[in-house]
Image 1 (cartoon, rainbow, N blue to C red):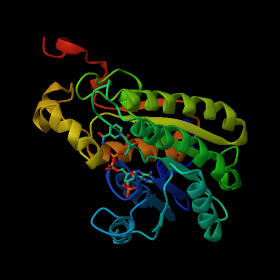
Image 2: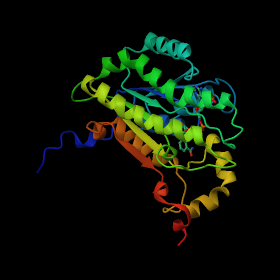
Image 3: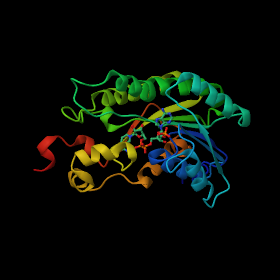
Amino acid sequence: MSDLGNFGGLFRLDGKVAVITGGSRGLGLHTATAFLLAGASKVIITARKLEGAEGINQAVSKLNALPVQGRAIGIAANVADTADIERLVKEIGKTESKVDIVVANAGATYGGPFDTTPDEFNKKILDLNVRGVFNLVRLLLPLLEAAATPTDPSRVIIVSSTAGINVPHVGQHGTIMYSVSKAAAHHLSRNLAMELGPRNITVNTVAPGFFPSKLAKGLIDILGGDEQLRDDNPRKRLGEPSDIAGVMVYLASPAGAYVNGEDISVDGGMRLVTGRHSKI
Ligand SMILES: NC(=O)c1ccc[n+]([C@@H]2O[C@H](COP(=O)([O-])OP(=O)(O)OC[C@H]3O[C@@H](n4cnc5c(N)ncnc54)[C@H](OP(=O)(O)O)[C@@H]3O)[C@@H](O)[C@H]2O)c1
């Protein structure tokens, strides 16, 4: 028999404090839900909007209705803005002496022809998807280090996209700067893995394919809708909340403690499909 330590705890997050950006809906909310169900004691979600059907408050209410002891709290912040990230970190520091897990998930995209791309969208995308992630991790470092130990490192998980690996959309609905920003997010993650590994913090990337969400809806419709995208995918479906939950809990829990600088695509294999080869 092998000594696997506390096997029953391999995928548990008991007592952990997590910060999730873009936690009010979509992939961030799936992650927050999974972390609480896995035993996290506190999940702090951030987004810009506090109120309304897509705001933080409704997400916190849903999360706190889960049959678990852990609690969700929400702090409104724009994580594309360095001063606002500083304020967010100060707010977190008022109640927390440590942060075990950071999921840099908030992201922005833009689709349109290359020639007429408004430069403000390039800035918005790079500020949130790259510079904001860099600064979020940098400014949260003292709290991450406070939780980090050699046997149980703190975790940074950067949500990128398979658009950071391939060239998914050019032309009328091109997403060139989004794709570039996500490639940068992958490489930021690898660089941070080297920088922070010796400080007992692991950094990994999760690269989703298509998951129905507000951000993805426009492009899903342009590409022919859910059914067409399901048909194109080697697994014959789009991503589901539990697909994100599984990989996030793996990377954040003892099971993922030795994984560092890795990119995990969660796309049913779609990133490997090229052109007509998917059909023949
Ligand atoms: N869904 C997909 O198919 C897919 C595929 C590949 C990659 N991804 C990536 O997954 C991540 C989450 O996307 P999603 O599909 O879940 O999108 P979503 O449902 O539109 O959610 C985006 C979240 O980010 C927040 N947000 C946006 N800008 C922000 C800012 N400047 N500061 C703070 N929070 C901000 C939003 O809240 P507010 O609007 O209130 O700020 C919301 O909570 C993104 O990084 C995206 O690129 C998604």
